[in-house]
Length: 477
Image (cartoon, rainbow, N blue to C red; front, side):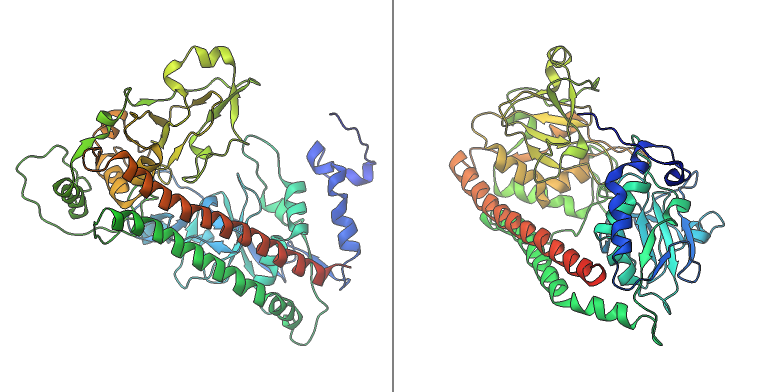
């Protein structure tokens, strides 16, 4: 449906694009006119925001297993900064002239300005960090504004409207620092202690914030329970690594010595002590390489030619290691689909993200009857009838699966990947040691916990909305 609207010259300002001038953003001025405190300032006000900058990705940057956190947009979520699953750089690079301006310290406000626009969070760590060009770094005058009040405001309904209006719509939406400065803040009337009223507003949110944190803690416990149930039912006791090298380069390094008698791959991760868990699995159970569990060779997809066709294309970004996001899938034509049979997926196929830091090792099931297509970053595993696809998916997501991704991936600081040939070497339990009925029992137990997590996720979303509504009601009539 096409819509038509007009704008007077005095309303256009410096932007002629449709999005900036769309009437849906008229709500911004309506809200500002109805603010309870009748006081507004912009993010350009240097008495409020003492400095605005964004990060960079210098040429030749090297990511390290340990070092200064180097944040990207994916590490900034509403109210939270993820410093566990981020890149790391050395102190010399952090202190360099190129990155010195984007140093991040405690109570700095971070805003995503490329890709997913407008996610805001306060950096809470005492450890310094840095960031790439997708993140804006705002230093606040804490005598006049409470950092968490500003973050709450920008994450609220009016913040969403501002970010929606100011962003440039393209293949990768973006907003620049000048446009960030156009965002108008509603601030409570000044008092002798200028942040006191802001603190009072935040305090009214505390019960809901505590409820939200409790739900998140329960969810985290459930996620840990999934892997422990899997291992308990297999009667395997291990100490699970906190993370893996291919997950954003965060794996810590250990010194070890290994006697080489027969070495298939000369790489320290392939031969790391934790990889001995697979030998323990093989000594306890009959195992087979993954390729022997398949009715067809493991294949990667193909590079799509996108159209307004009818066939969904599943990409790495559509895989969430829990479910596939079909709503945002791009399309190819039926003709293109028919011409590339090895990239076609069927119901029950196990799909494995096979490239990229942070994405490698994601595993989901295609559970629909409709035809679909995968791009060249995803591998298709089509199993024999003796093997339950959900059990195989959970196995590959577990410690015993992820360690094998660690062993077999190739590449370094650029693009890492795992080839179908290497995937085929993964050791899994043979049906002789774990019959189909037992596989299904384990998969059912894990699926039940995932259902509980889905219920928790719903409660978390509802609680976040409650927080947003309560904050909004404190500011606007």
